[in-house]
Length: 213
Ligand code: PRP
Image (cartoon, rainbow, N blue to C red; front, side, top):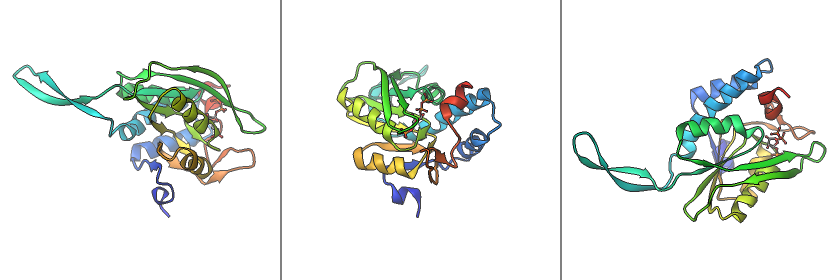
């Protein structure tokens, strides 16, 4: 069954460049420098789709030749990377939406239990019109994404979307149950989680591979 039919909250990119970049990201011998660059590039590709339907307003523009009307963003989105692994992907999102502000959420997964542990939060001003974009390459159990969504809702975010690189069915399913209004844009829906809660086939630990730790 197609991923979108199974999960109405999920949008899997069909872009050939996203698929090629993801293949290189998955490869075990990709260096941290190339890994970060590819994450940044794929972040831009995923953002094109995830931000396609941002709210717009009409504006009046002076071209060099005449006055005309044009569509502008109603308000800049708030992009929210989950530390650490969300940072390279977030850079790619910001490359195509310079007017965005950025909030940081520090969440790490306990290695034994896979439960999320919060360690940092700093958000820019949130208004009723704010669209918040959670950015994290891995959606595994969904614990971190659900935790991030709860914290953004508590901060007043009414509309939230998520960009990730690879998603496990378990995480997508949990997001659908706990936060059904949050759309998720990903480069791939992978097969399953393993007994250590790693995504398979996956790409390993995105934070460690990005930063060489
Ligand atoms: C990874 C990943 C997500 C989380 C996904 O972060 O970047 O934030 O795990 O797992 P979940 O869906 O089961 O919550 P990690 O804890 O490895 O932190 P890091 O980014 O600092 O490496």
